[in-house]
Image (cartoon, rainbow, N blue to C red; front, side):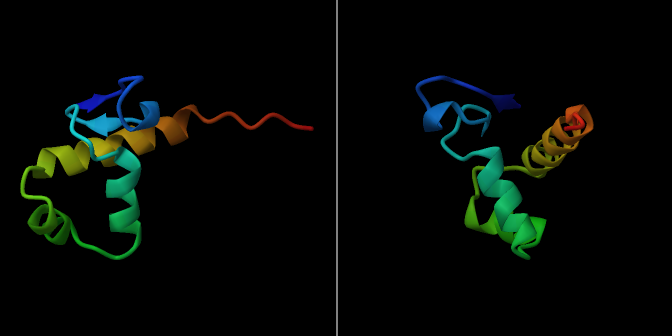
Length: 69
């Protein structure tokens, strides 16, 4: 569901090749919007799209490595 295309949205991860980035969705949720509000504002998105964004972010966080200075 999450796609990365070099010529689309600056190569940022997008949902199903659409021009809405994972960052956009996560920002809306972090800003206080509910999943239902995001879906109402973007009717071409689905609940599984939103959950895929959350899963992608969780996986990225899990892979983050902090190296001591």
